[in-house]
Length: 198
Image 1 (cartoon, rainbow, N blue to C red):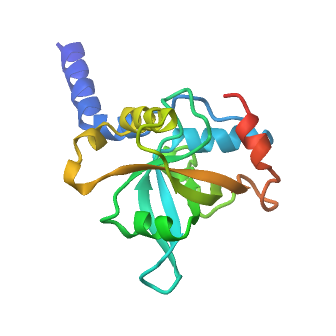
Image 2 (tube, rainbow, N blue to C red):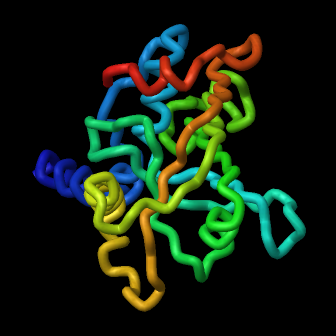
């Protein structure tokens, strides 16, 4: 009888935290912090959201940061290139259509792999990808790939209102800033980042 009660309690416990656990399910294990390209690609592929900053057309060019969902590929097959599903009802897309300069900041903290470290601590990795946020041609193979990547990671997006004219954008990366330990940013070129095989 005690065994049945224990298992019932265990099942109820896991059901209660199912949403929390699912949100932090890692596809790949955390790489060695000294393998900069691997760590950067892991950080991007494991995350599902970040802060996308554009230059505001409504605030005279001031930086405008916005929480956005993204995907760099289907789970386990990330490309390193972030794709976004944006609407011009939101300032981020409107800004990008006028001035492509953008950056995406991502933290390791939401993955739950920072232990008790503060999100700003250097042991809790962070990466900023800077470049150009560009609209993809709707019927291109890349847009089709991006939609698959986005809808796989964010299934809710499929049901977003058609009248809101959501479109696929990508960040063409020109610079990478990453900290994953004490000692300042790790040197990493865009070429090293993109050529790394997951």
